[in-house]
Image 1 (cartoon, rainbow, N blue to C red):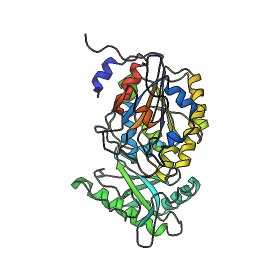
Image 2: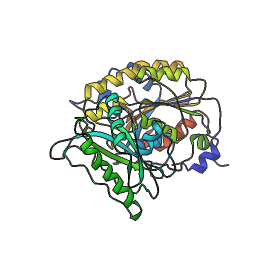
Image 3: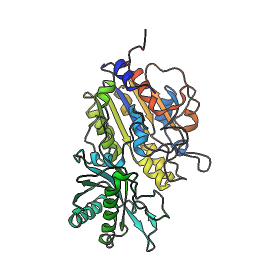
Image 4: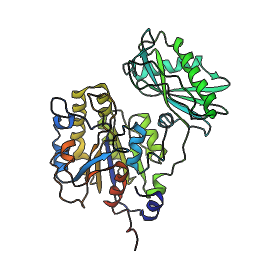
Length: 401
């Protein structure tokens, strides 16, 4: 990948605009011979593919299934191995919580366990956000400190919430309690070195204290913590690429990720239509727009093939609205694949489409995994996507003499 120093040297500011549309987890595997992208009726995406260049991206590396943070960071131009950003920090930033430098944040799920302590649902049936708020308020009233460390609980969306531990001698070198699989027992957090022993004790004690308090809140009778982390040191997209970036997302984690790299978070509704309306309303104010579509991933994780198809088709209907704005570079891709038959993130490469006035002729005739595999871009690391976007908007100077 291109180094940060080279980007600082070569990047130039101009008025050209980039749109990066990420359909989270859109890549898939065939069910009855076809993937959701192949089943979906997508006349606008397919017409655009015929006028664009395409390929397949590896989120972080071949064979590695990434989390949401490592899958998105490369699309913004950052090395996911250098910037290993914890999910807890992203969730906290996404709900506009002001993290202190010493704070430890954890992404938490309300979950369901059976009488034997086995996880039967990691997301408690994706409970309604209003119920989430009530449970978080109750837990907050009962769990205020542990070993002198302040415990702050904030509601997220559906089954998600955030726990912040605020106090002295806390470190993020601890393991998660979420095994990220059903049919298993929750894990016990442990320290990765001597610095994390206190934090691990507090994390485990929080889980222990929450258990009896949740007995009347089925199916949300347990909590799982992961991405236990603190605020990282990361340069902004403005400093690296001379961009004025904005994010349009409905879920806190993705807002947090965008905020971390210096994007302005635009207010939008909770549905796809409102996201594209927000883009139009703010078109004159920014030169880089990140639009995040969540439900393609959610339905992949739920194994809901037909619902994933329906989201893809809904996105397709809005493609002409973006084209009417005449972006100088328009990229459509996924951050990772979430095959319905696996119900989880996977290592499979992601379809990638780039439209600009400077594209060459491409072989793809539709926006699907198989057609994008024929594209002139071939297979490449997602971290290189930013170079392509900058190049196609003439935002990179020539390198060398």
